[in-house]
Each structure stands twice: as C-alpha cells, then as structure tokens.
Image 1 (cartoon, rainbow, N blue to C red):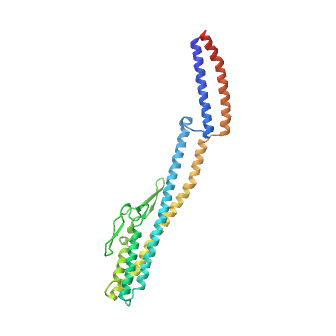
Image 2: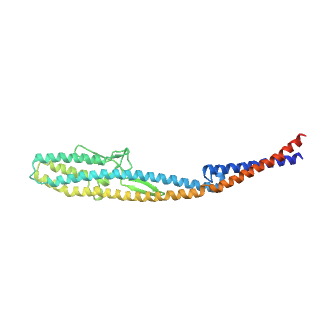
Length: 303
C-alpha cells in the first residue's frame, strides 16, 4: 500500500512540476513577447533565429565598412581636386611665361611660385586619413613620396589598393597606389613631379631661348597630368556609386531579415494569454486534487 501511495505521490509531484514549467515558459513568452527564449523552447527555431541575428550583425558591419569607405572617398576626392587645381595653375603659369622675352627676375619669381606648387602637390600626395597615408598602397604607415633638394621625387609605398568588403565575397577597390596618380610614366602616363621640376628648371635656365622651349614643352604634359589626376577622381566616383548601391541593398535587406526573425521568434500574445489562463486553471486544479490525495495518505501512514 505504501509503495503504491509513493508512486502516486511522485507521479503527482512530477506532473505538478511539469505544469509549473509550462506555466513559467508561457509567462516568459508573454513578458518577453518572444516564443523562443532559449534553445529548449524550439531547438530548430533557435538555430534559425541565431542565423538571422548573425546576418543582421554582418549586415551592420558591412554598412559600417561602406560608411567609412564613402568618407574616405570624399576625403580622397577633395585631396585630388586640390592637387588637380595646383597642377592646372602650374600649367597656366607655364603657358603665360613660356616666351623668351620674359626677364630673368620675372622667371625667377614664377619659379618660386612653381616650387611652392610642387611642395603643395607633394603635401597632397602624402595626405593622411585617420592617421594612415592614403596614397602609399598597403604600406599605410609609410610616407609615400619624398623628394631631394633638387626636386627629384621618389615613391616609397607599394602597389596595393584599398579594399572595402561590402558583402560576402564582394569588395570595392579604391586606388591607393600613389604612382598611378602622380608618377604614372610606367603606364604611359605622366610623372607630375618630374614635369613640375622640368618647369622649374626651364624658368631658372640661364639661356632664355632654351628655357622658353623647356617651359613650353611642359604645358601639354602638365595638362595631361591634371587629366591623370581627374581620371583617378573618376575612379573614386565609380567606387562611390558602387558603395551607395551596396548600402541601398543592405538597407533594404535588413528589415526583411528582421521581419523573418520576428515571424519565427515572436509570440502570439493573444494566444499566449489564453494558454496562460488555461495553464493556471489546470495548475490550480492539479494542486487541489493533489492536496486531497496526498494529505489523507499521509494521515493513513501516520496511523
């Protein structure tokens, strides 16, 4: 009799604990407004929810990358815009003072202006963004350009470009190899620093006729150098367009992922409240029934 009674008591206690667990689970769902609060609620569903959360986190990271990339492009474009204007100013000076009738003092004065332009272009080429050189390739801690007192410039960076990860396996490249912009004679372009030096040398040439010819020869080349800088600006504009397109895609993607996760994760509050009421009633009924069964049995045992 005692064995049977113990089994009955243990069964009732187990059932009460089970009901209490279901009651607590439903209360948590209502409080959190989520159907899934831990893995045991729905192991498969929780796996899907974690996948959605990871997707949202990755999407946020990509958009942060894009925002930093767009800011960098804006900085690079402003830098090259200024450099382009400087080179064009040098071209205008070359065109204006290429005549052999200019006095030596005038040419020397213009040479000083071009030297100042050279230094400013060098400063633009050695610009930093967030503490890193923007035109030194991957060698962002290395000043890309240096020059000797004779205005001979050297490139100390590498050939790397700057990559921005915008999606799984998708990158947008930004030109970071300063030679492509300022010393591109290897690819049939213009070495802008050499050409500015040629202009300085022509202006300081002791022979007005020879100097004039040297100055005149720089006019077209400096124009090509200006266009070379602007070509890089056009590349940045294309990269900016790609970043904006990627950002728009991710902006539209995020709410769709959030909606899918919410559909899977969120609780039906109306249904949960009704279920809670039913569970509370069942729990109270079980407790009352258990009280009637267990208490007399205990008295019988004590007798």
